[in-house]
Amino acid sequence: MNEPDGQFDERSLVERAKKGDQQAIVALLTRHEPMIRRVAIATAKSCGMMNEIDAEDIFAELFAILLRSLGSYDESRRLEPWLNGVTQKTVLKTFEILNREKSRRDISAPRTDDEVDANWLAMVAIAPTRERPSREAQRAELKTVIGRLKSQLASEDADLLVRCLENEEEHATVAADLGISKSAVAMRLYRIRLECQELLGTRSNYL
Image (cartoon, rainbow, N blue to C red; front, side, top):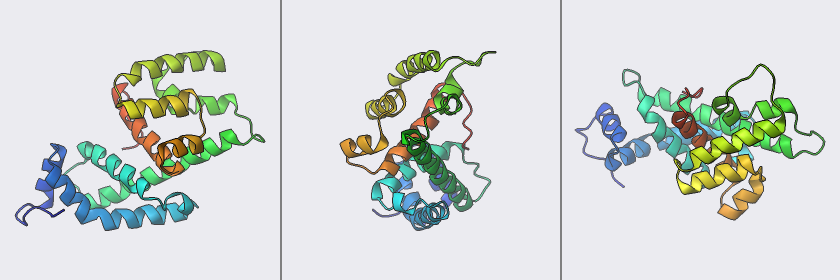
């Protein structure tokens, strides 16, 4: 895939990419892909996640998140440092999701009410109350929220949300079924999280 003619500077490429111009999207990714990969790998190494990010499907999800985030990019800033920051945050959030799922599956560390409260969808979708609801009540309300979101998400994203969040299936099982890595499952969940926050009208704590 070739970049468009040199007459298009980076700002015009960003403007066109925001409008869905596939040629501009390819040009931006081609131009910055080496840097994005270097930053992702360096960040993974820094948090001991290197074994989790060696699969190519990770980068497919990462690029999807970067493209989705372009809408919030301030064009008065240089693009490369912005991409650098978003890449770092995405890898770190993926690492958090992997660790949370690992801890939940550790029979020596049973899930607590505090961990239930840390569920991101519960935090953004369920109205706070004076008294902490029981886990059963919270899960019932969470199921209702997921049901409302399912019709607004792509079918494969809705299925992943149900399997991982509502049914609490192991990431390893879901990854095996989908033919992708566990880290790709985690990063895809993070991408879905961003979309759900937009759909629910809540401000993302990511950008």
